[in-house]
Image (cartoon, rainbow, N blue to C red):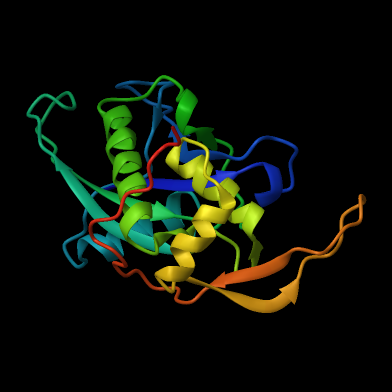
Length: 225
């Protein structure tokens, strides 16, 4: 099992000044083959566990990641030559961590921007691409954004999260209209604290559900223009 774990990091969604961007969790291989290259976390299935419990165990044991808001099986990679030696078939999982979370990671494990991946081991680069494509699609027709967002958020924060995950700008007003029409988000009745510039405090929203569901199977959030 291999886990493609995404989080939007930077900007309003983390304690940094960086522009929000979609990141993936990778660890650096210390042994051959592919020593020094970066790989997805994962490992082998035990005889006494199913795939989902196995990937959760490995994320907790190997990279101390326990703050997953969503986890689902994605694809199987079965090219006979995908790794040297005996044949290894890999099942990939999509994992999502909400933006406020700051899990402590081992020294050999880091978050990397999806748009600027380091040298990747084996076929792990295509696995990240596949998982990102699936996430982009699911953001259009499901409520999966709940797994990337804080419990409460201003629309500007949600816009930044969707823009980072989709890879193109999103209009906050249009996003609000679409998600409210689908009953995906709702006002919490509270407001954000005013910034240094003053002005009217922004209304805060939350997702109506924190479990995955299809909201509009034919929808697509397309780039502007």
